[in-house]
Length: 341
Image 1: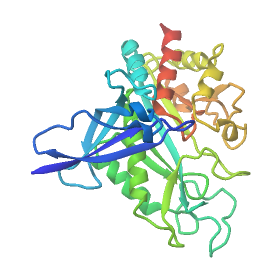
Image 2: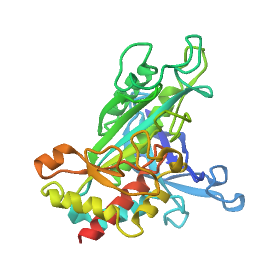
Image 3: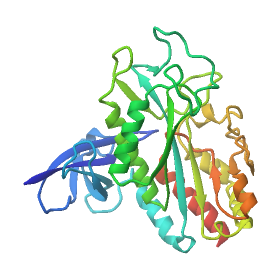
């Protein structure tokens, strides 16, 4: 007998990479091995030298096909087996190894928005325009919640795939949701984030909205202009020192605000970040840096429990929903751990 392996990778589209995948039939008893693809069709190679290598980094059960099928998340390599220029995982893994003595943990909160065609799910329809935001966050009822069946199927799929998914909730804008991955180290947390994103997109393919139009999940950081929350990927972070010392938590927050660091992080935290980090809607401005206890209007929040307990973690609230988690986790590791070394 054979099984089906769905090979998944991140392409070279700029400024925001896309997920790609294709299936391979693998003989029973064999592990998914190195494969390849046409990089000229994914913004990763010219047509006259188009081969790009797929190297598996995370293999899980496939909750979509079921049975013995597998999902195979891959990093991209050049034909000489060096990291492809679009491969951000390699540098993330190197940073995690360099600072391995810090035992870094991450918890990433992925916000996203469902669309029905070109309109956010639950927006102008036969029932009218949605009420101003206020009752949607963690809400209940068909007048405030849109897309729950997809969300529940996605949650179960992530569990069945063995991902470190820790929760879900409806977000502040109608049609907007969040799932959380972690706590887990890098680059694994970023691997699982990309795989959870792929599962979200794939599961949404099977659903239609109230108008019969297929539903899609998007990571647009500001899906609706005006007085509506954007979509971020708040990133919680700790080292072994921070898990034992409040002073280390404060030092980590201050390191993220060190000379040149805020601009470096903002430049790598997702396209369109200026549209979301305006100083309104639970954000700090993209061109300013601040940190504070229990302050969701700060760049970096120290949870109140951390101050009370005298140890724990910090939350970087700046990353966009469309960020590359490999870039985000690498930068946080480099910035905080180098300052503490």
